[in-house]
Image (cartoon, rainbow, N blue to C red; front, side, top):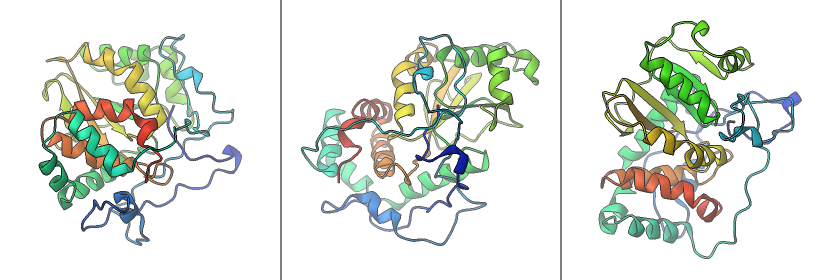
Amino acid sequence: MTDTPESNPAEAPAPALPEPLPPGPLYLKKQPLWSYFLTPIAVVLGAGIIAGAIWWTGDDGDDTAANPDGDASPVVGAVSTVEPTKPAAAQGLLDTFNGYARQVGLDEAKFSQCLGQQENISLINDQLQRGSALGVTGTPTFFINNKKLVGAQPTAILDEIIEAELKGSPTTLDGYSAAIQQLATSSPPGFQIMDSRPDVSDAEIEGNPDAKVMIAEFSDFQCPFCKRWTESSIGDVRSRLGDDVAIAFLHFPITQIHANAGNASLVAICAGEQDKFWEMHDLLFARQAEWADLR
């Protein structure tokens, strides 16, 4: 599954042009920081960042197929039409994120200062642009070395691709099961063999940066399918981390449908400056329902 705006698949519009993050101060207590990023901007980065992702299907968007404990059938372009229910907000966005900073043990003064640094906006923009150039239009999207896998697919499918990379990296679809071949022939394709690996030099990496298999994930902290994948499958990946397997996180906040996704990316980046990225990563996904609708 990938996360998408709600729409009738038969009347799906072309992807909307994204709005890059503008420069300047970001984090103010009386207004959510990402609202400053959503002012009208006519400039489109590079060849155009497709941050408003659209993956359409002809069915009702049943999300049960993404369960890795099921039969490992591929999930082809399922559309997110209903966001999870969030509880009533007890405090504001800034207070909540400051609470998370304390919870993972950050220096709050350094954290607050980091939130205002322009280079962090540039980092998010760079990764958005990179994802767009690679054809990323929905989250989560994975690149297992040069193999592109779209959506919160069953763990068994990811495991098969990892094993194939460890054994020599197939160059044709003949090296894969019928389930992966089905993904490859779907429209749009859910699996592709790309010409090269994505650049992860500026990504947060868990495991050996020189691992034989690098799983690069373009993700959105407010995406319910990214949350589901993190809760259901990342543990399996982490059990394999080392010289053979590593995972890299690249930011792809789809702000057209997830107003606070950019907020969360910034918080995670600032946690990473204090070597707490993955602790904040896990906390943001675990508490997604708590912060997603805050202002």
